[in-house]
Image 1 (tube, rainbow, N blue to C red):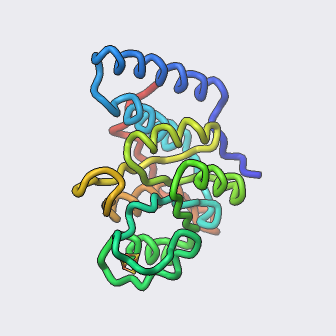
Image 2 (cartoon, rainbow, N blue to C red):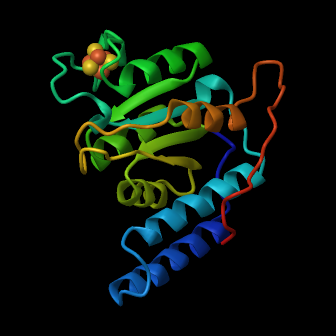
Length: 195
Ligand code: SF4
């Protein structure tokens, strides 16, 4: 069992913060998806500020299935190694990144599978990629497990051939990864709001 868990009081504050923002969203006083974006930013900041670190093997890179090119014939959901790294979608680069850094990968087709991956692998820290709404709800669902979030890009619309900047994923992993000698990389929580 990992020692990296967010404190109960912080989790409660985030949940209340989210409910208030959802109320404001329903009243059209904040933009759509703003509550989820703020929750992700707040949890990101807390994880980085708390100095949470994980060994590479304790890190889970959790990806949405919509990153895969819609016409790809290879089934990568349960085995990313089936990817041929043809360059047509971000899965190839993310697979190479996970091999290079030694972190594990899970590809989820929905919230149920994502929760199952968290239960089975019991990660120290999760780096999740998803659209703002799924990401925010997933981060809340997973509490007190620390889930860092990176939002995917949707140039072709929701849930279809989405993209993610590899540099952003790499940078976020390196911020929380400690190597086997206990050396921890520099942490900068700047840019994320406090809750
Ligand atoms: S990079 Fe991998 S998952 Fe993406 S289209 Fe090519 S073989 Fe399929």
